[in-house]
Image (cartoon, rainbow, N blue to C red; front, side, top):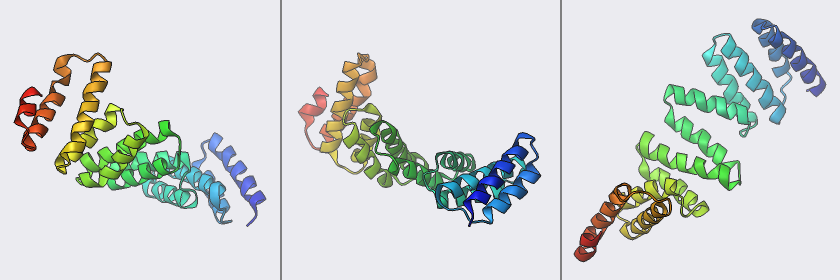
Length: 212
């Protein structure tokens, strides 16, 4: 394995990219791949190979190259984004969930991780038909942002489905409070009050159900 040769070959491939000579570019990158570069360098090489295969109209080859890139570096951002876009286009929601999970697991930044966790929860609820599978992701998101409506709503629905009425009630009250702070109109908050009434009725608290 000679990293210098890999670098020289990828530099040569860039020249062919600039002239849009994709067949020659494929050949040169293939020679670089034969040197078995590992880690981030290998992932970058296979990501570039995927782009070349896409230019040549070889969707299967592009997909295989992306898979290889992510096997060498599961956190390669561009390969992740490309693989996720391909999975979404193909309606492969289990693969989308897997890739979003990789992204969520590879960061500790709250602002980056929170929406990914919420998206994971929604994927399980809306696309995979396995709502319970989304529960741990939404609960993790709730720990990051306990008053964010984007997690309060879907998690409350999951708690209601699981008959965890007390926990659902607290989340719905949080939604009402967030709506009031945002100066939402009473008609916009009415569905949440209706849910509170249903929860009160479910646990046999008719006076509270009437008040909600």
